[in-house]
Image (cartoon, rainbow, N blue to C red; front, side, top):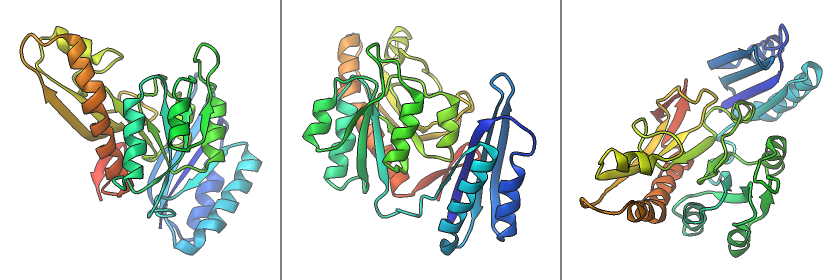
Length: 283
């Protein structure tokens, strides 16, 4: 069984040692390890990917919990194989309905073989969408839509999700959340073709560049925003010269973006692709 261990907490010396000593002492094979010291935030972060027998998972989880209590680290133990037949999803959204609805409908129709455990938002606007699909709705934002990141982590833990799907969730996840759910667990939809059109206004930027082909990108989120190479799926559409920007955005938001994200999430859930050393690889 392939297992991902993540650890995050206040920086100090020797934080990785008890984790590494335990897994190697149990005979686990380490296939990937990353450690970062964020000096400006005095933060330690670590990802360790190992191979262990299926029977070791519960014991490993208990041991990491004990190590976390001693070191003050937030340690998570996760495996895509634990619920590989039907993983649990958290779908995060803000205002736009088309993309999160597409995920919920794809799950309902059996296109995505998963269970949507919760709809999370920094706004209340899409509560009715959750009610329509009989899914718990959790608001983690204040009156201005500013997200409470600690509440988001607590919500993800409460629902014990495998993957976090950002379906036009209009907030940037801080590194602390990215690290705690690192290893290919956070899937994002960007409403432009990467790497050509990043940022918050990719339709406008592509339109101003006189492009006739527009697109969307589904990719894994990692703590280093500019690392690249995390694309899971891309989908494009073309328009005729003279098409209005409003029409381009309508086609993109209503048709192209939802289809792009659905296929990207399906590829991850069906375990066709995964993230290794910040790169997407075919299984």
